[in-house]
Length: 112
Length: 115
Image (cartoon, rainbow over all chains, first blue to last red):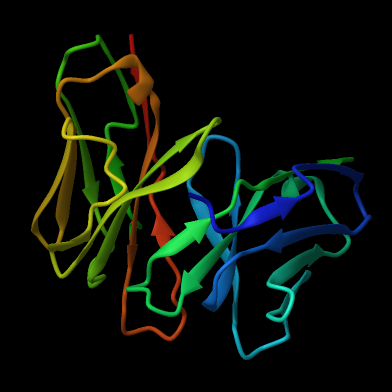
C-alpha cells in the first residue's frame, strides 16, 4: 500500500512560474524524501527532510514538513521546461531498514 | 561510478516463459531494493536485501517471483512462469547505510512486456 499521497495528480504550468505539490502520509516517519522521474527513466533523489526539520532548500527547490498534519510540500521556483517530470514523495519509517514507501506521484508539465 | 546497472533494458516474452532480470548495485552499497512500477499500482517495493541477505519479501506478489543476491555486486529477480499481468517496469535501487543521507539510487529499469 502507498504511504504518501500526492496532490495534485497533474500540474501544468508555464516556464518561469512556480510549481507546488503536496504529499500527505499516514504513519510516523523518520524522514521524507522527494524524487523526480523523467519519462522512461529511473527515479532521481532530489531532497530529504528529517522529521525534526520544518523546511529545507536546495537550489530552486524548497521542501516543508509539518509532522502534526503529516504533510509535506515541494516548491519548484522559476520552473523550466527541463523540470517536466513526475515527482514522488517517499517516507522512511521509524522502524525502517532504509525502506521507503512511495506515493503515486504528481505529473508536472512545464511549457515554454 | 556507473550507477546502478540493470539488464536487459527491455524484455518481451510470451506467457509461461521464464524471465530473469539482473541488477548490479553501486559498489560499496549494502542495501539493494527491487521495485515494480505500473500505472495502476504505482511504485511497489517487492523485496530488499541488506548485505546480500533478504530482509523483507512481503511485497513479492506470489511464488512465481523469486530474488537472489549471491554477492554484493549482483542480484537477480526471476519470474517463472510469467503472466501478462507481470508486465511493468522493474527497478533496482541501492543504498549505502553509512551515509547520513538515506538516498536510494535507482537504475534505469527493465521494461517487461509479457504477451
